[in-house]
Amino acid sequence: MGRLLIIDALGAVVLLAVWYYCLVRYNRRKGATALHSFETACLGKGRVIEARWLDACRLQARLSFATHLLENARVTIRLFHRPMPVHWLISLWRKQKETVTFEADLDYVPGFQLEVFRHRWVTHKNASTSANAKNWTISRPGPIVLTTKTQWTQELTPVVNTLITSRGQDLMVVRFRNESPHLVAIVGIDALSDEQGAATFLGVVRDLAAGASTSHQ
Image 1 (spheres, rainbow, N blue to C red):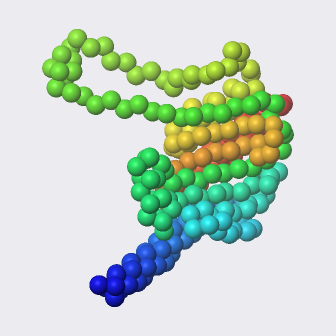
Image 2 (image 1 turned 135 degrees about the horizontal axis):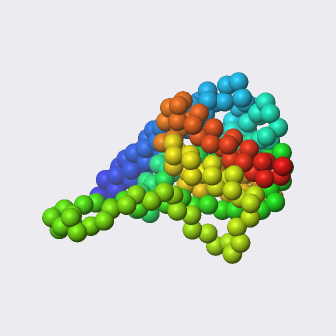
Image 3 (image 1 turned 120 degrees about the horizontal axis):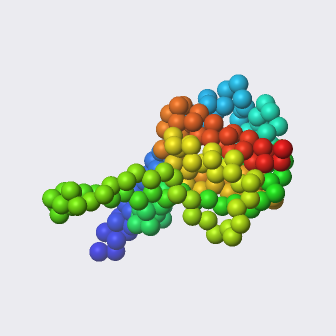
């Protein structure tokens, strides 16, 4: 009986070791692919000068851009903690997402504090709605901005306009602040699934930085 328990324990240890090794390699391949897409999108505009894994699920790279619009830039790719099954299941249960976080300082320190969360609601038709469609008035409003600011300052307009018109990207969070890093933009890792998506994300980030700089002119 004792021998069987030892064999079972050793088998479990070996299984966990194989799981950990395979899932670490999977995470590294996925992170490297996303970073490669981002690096390719930077060609002619910037380059990756250093990349390192902070742990089994976080890859961070320092960037250097040709212009001074974005300085001290870095991108952090956060993946599910797949090597640890319990942590992975918790992430799935909480419906967390794998993300790409871009952080940089701007050539001008923003004179405002701004944190934007973008949400979308999607409704589905049901039988009763379809049957009584003639009693419904359907309209398609433009973007709606809900803000906690009591007064709207003119310097926010270029930044918000960029967010409204950047329909190609589902930015999850955008932050501006007067402390380093001045700009933080978070997007789902699916946005970097190919070079075109990475280029679009980089373009939106540059437009946000340019909008913040415009407010100083």
